[in-house]
Length: 225
Length: 225
DNA sequence: GCGACTTTGTGCCTGCGTTCACAAAGACCT
DNA sequence: AGGTCTTTGTGAACGCAGGCACAAAGTCGC
Image (cartoon, rainbow over the protein chains, first blue to last red):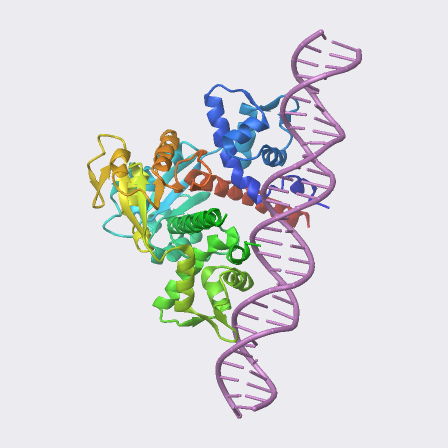
């Protein structure tokens, strides 16, 4: 079959989601002067099991040396390449409310290859103002620049999210990080990742409540004994 | 077995993660005056498959009526109860940098049962200032209030996250939403959920890069034909 | 009151992800 | 150079989650 080379590079989604974690751990090790690391140590630093780590890395190729471990610099490089971090990515933040404002100033993006280059809003009171060294512009303004390979970060109010997403897609954006709650409908080929803060808290609340009941249950069991 | 009642209420983690989404969809329907909804319609609104939705809801009990659908108000109530949202939760935001600042002002929390009651920071320049109507205090100050059933939101710089988590746990916090990148070590019984913005972008970057190769691949295939 | 119709709840199956355990591979020591 | 020892890479087993399809159940019209 013609899928021979393609199949070799097929990386499971779950593995992809962990690669950034490994990369961060490797960078931290490198900063501490560590040159070589075993799967056991790296797994510890990344908060995963060593067997899973090895299986994840095996999808990238055989970059470890048996009896020794992994070369930190080499592995960092391979993971970076796989994630497409060898060149910087341009990020457009859409919606300059509280959250958009904070994201524009968030330093964690730039340090990892993501350059916030555009701030978008449609509110005339906000357009034109300067935030974190960038002028807020409209979608119409953005259109005049090269719109290729942009990652859009949606930080609009919920009711504006779908419209904003549509506009972004119309400009050629194929990757969206969505902070607005609710369901987003996009054409095939466009990837959306959702970060819903309230949802995360609700999941925590569920477990917190559950934990209480469990504790009560344990207590009752002890009493019964 | 003594697990009879406990087993009945065992809800899969994947289901728990979707319940907030269903709840939001139900609230939206209710606001539009819809009283009864079928699994098909609700699944559409929540962005899932109807069969999966029904299986999820079946874990809560039989609250649907065959041939009719689900009572919107009733189902909202049951999901809220299951998630422990019938009483408000107190949230403490730790770290008043850019992100913490934005989270303090974020309206999406309060509207869904999460009341931001405390803002924590250890920087003397920030402690005492007022943000979004709340005075920033220290951990020592927080200790003087009731520290039970708090959800802690970590928005500190990476290097301060572990220390902050330790202090929160020492105060009795058992649920942490962590925005700081890196691995957090906590004692058993404490639940941590992680939101890593840079990681999300890196995953998007991977797919964006992959998408390009795939497109090129398709193009080559067309040419070959 | 009965039949037709709608929609739920669920048993089965398939696929993915995780864990375990071990053979293969290479370094290091003597 | 050979043996020992460490650590990787992976085959196999297992469990969980998602999708399909259908029987059960209840409503609505006549």
